Image (cartoon, rainbow, N blue to C red; front, side):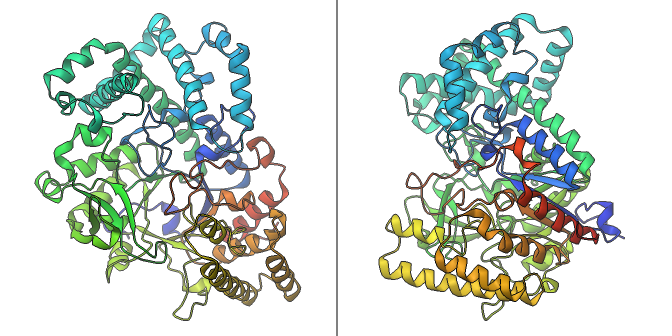
Length: 575
């Protein structure tokens, strides 16, 4: 029997059952109808596909609001707000107010719009500037139609949403309207830190005056959140039929030049940023440039702000990943302008925050996964497990002291197991050392360092193949064929299907409560979506999936991998 102090776990877990699903980057989903970026209709289609394949959940990247006036700032882990949604994920054409027989349809029939839509869809990367331009025009048409023609019921739903959002939603809309105003005056000068001094506090008379003058734009930004929540809520309701539903992601912090910090500046420490000390994921340490929450304010409000944040992010989630969950215990904080080596740990009220996380988990009936990679204090994972917060275990990291991959049976039960993540190579790209090649090309490794890194990667690949063979997931001939494929540097994704399939078959044999198949691996992607330590040098958060959603049901590799994982997790005969 679960103690009431623990986080929620699905009843199926208490019966000894396990779950599996896909982890996707929503922006990377390619379809024949979206506007150049994955959207909530694409997510709904993926949920339908998950149901057809017998999956229990669909995981997504953080859906947090990003800078509306600076769309190229595309990292979902550096948002302007963790309370609100990114309007670029709205499917404009399905908004009830976007009249396809009226202004909306006329907009879509313009030759230059048709050309832009084709270009946005066919681009191998998300062109955020183009996508934002298209969606901005479409959303403005929908809003004007709403203002002119909304039914009484729809107008009441909008008012209810605005009322429920309260001061936080109102301030967010003020921020967006003001930011748009100042960006128009000085393109590129987005964010409150670049505004005139009298506008840098939300309580100032200047802010209230300008917000009133731009009341239509304030209403527009509230409307964007209304529509985004409307569409996501519909997907989440459908996803609940899977068992767990949507597995959402809460970023560890926000951009200091953001709506959240402007709205609640006293809660943040602006002279420092969140990061990480040197570890396997970042040998030189990492400075994420995110504003940390003030510990004193957390103590004084009894964690009320954190509770509100969790509640907002659990609203549509059947499971929630807390990015860098160690931040509940301590944060590595770096003085602004310093390297990561100049940082130090600051303790946070762990017991309080953990209690709130468990309470909100139970209230929302939302499973919690703590991303606990990297350096963690002694006893941290054990404490998380005692509260039924699942650990986050990556195949590529789960090694013993000799560097050998641990056996499936050695994985913890209260865990989510997956092969890799957005900051690491895909399973097809990993043995090739695609990440090593990128670092060498960018000058982060010299020729000698690159050769040494490739040599080490070949050793690691040999160890993984050995572990897979030990479990009977690869026979001798397949192992030898994979060695030849890796040595030849083959770049055909299908050549790595045996490795990808065996890797997830390995994870499915662990006792972990949840097995997450990364969509990039199922689709045979070679290149990772984010390269830590880079900004403009690498197309982070932009690479689309090779395979369109409409073709996934007929994609043999995708179907075989899903069948293999489902059969093992469910203890069914392999199809």
